[in-house]
Length: 403
Image 1 (tube, rainbow, N blue to C red):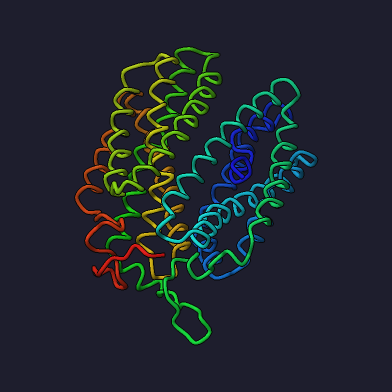
Image 2: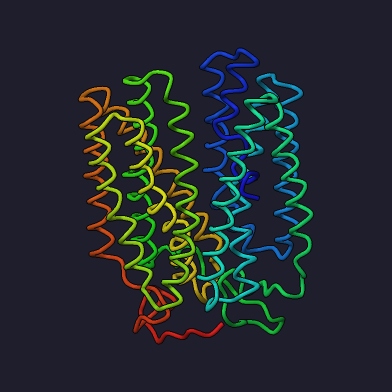
């Protein structure tokens, strides 16, 4: 599923520009359409996953829609078709991650979720690495068109494999963050959205996610621009090396984070490490234009992003425990990621245009320091070993570590 959930990504712009000779304006339009659709669908996707019991089918359908969308783009590369396909891909990408996390929680329970999410993320990054190698090889030696077939093949395989999960092994009330039942039919009544948003720790967490990506998202694109300016011709190779090497680091980091949480290390301490890495990365980027140094510095992103991918889902699970709104919280978190990334790219681009790359990187580093201080000061520990955990209404109550 690693190569399916994000669709074609940057390869679409390469295909439309190099093979179909599209203008930059139309390419920007269809690339933006996917992101906008994903952002709009995040919260509805979370509500949908919380509400239904056919989560396996949702994943299978979403994966197949991605595959069909890729084939439509390959065979009918006209603006209306590509635009519709990109919107479909964006909507599907909003459904798949919360579905996977919900299935994980519904199968293993709260106590084992950190280890399960750690393994999920390890496989996800390994899948991204393998997909990047396959995509690079196919694009270079066979043709870019084969990337569409590759994703379609993965989509069909994912749809078939997810249906092998046994339905009777999924606790659907648990999968949405419930712990007990509230009516005679055995259904848990979820907390109202308005009451959920009154929780201080949830709001602190969402703001922390926005600040994390505000400081982080634009760093690699800006580093790529530096390489393209100073070392023209090396930008594509260097960026590919950055992505591949970072994915390998993320595999190891995801496993390490899972091990640390099993040993009782708090979620807050682990997330603080990720936040502390960001300003270091920004300062280092401001000091060099060497493509080799950029690749080495980007390994730090493997640390930060690898930690975030595991710990953020686990914290969301902790905060939503007993509310029945786990997947809604994931939608809010994904929306926060998108907002932070958009702010990062807009701010980074504007500062670089006015004051240069060094100032741009230092600005992002300063925002990262703000994120670190904000999270350290206002976010409580959410793990089962903390003295308290969240109760309805955002107050503190007795903690349990049972399923």
